[in-house]
Image (cartoon, rainbow, N blue to C red):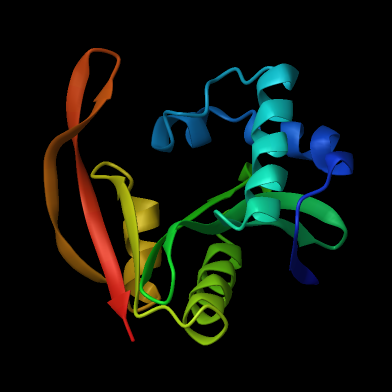
Length: 165
């Protein structure tokens, strides 16, 4: 498997749209609608590119053997202190160790290049796959944020995991 992370470009739109248009991604990241229109995907991609240019976030496109397999990054960057990690993997690439490799890479980048002291991830309490991924990458559970997210008029819990350098 030839895995690469790189900055997003406008040329990524068709493949990104194919991967992001997934019910499972929407279930775990409610901000991404399902079905996800091409217009919404285009706006997401434009935001990723803009945020990288402004230095607000570090967003990456995940490519495997030349095909887009998902996206990842660091958000809520606080210079030389902390950031929130995020990622999603397209359905064709789940369960193959991609998430673990990507999370380890992004974590290493945060600590070594950005000189962060803390990287954390929040996830819906129902998202067992992401919880297991964070545990495998040595993130530790810090707590449960009770009724922290509203999804379809229902409040649900979020978990917070972190790794400290």
